[in-house]
Image (tube, rainbow, N blue to C red):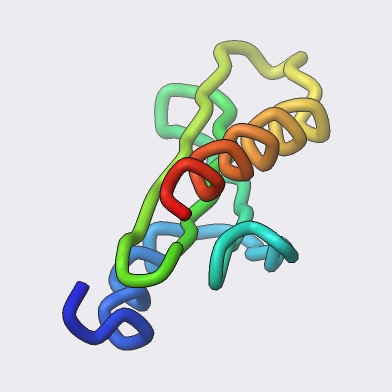
Length: 86
């Protein structure tokens, strides 16, 4: 991304639901929940490390999925991705 702060907005627009900022994961990271049209449940982290953006999305099938666990797994995976990009 040439202008990282400006260009990152297009990535963060992928979060359609309530957004929660995540601390200590890259320069910026946002966690959001998204339900898919076909009834699946998803958690997504959109983040930035220096001039690179990344998206981590985990999708699970079924309404009995623990959303908290899904968010936790997604944020842990985002920590690993951000660490690799540093």
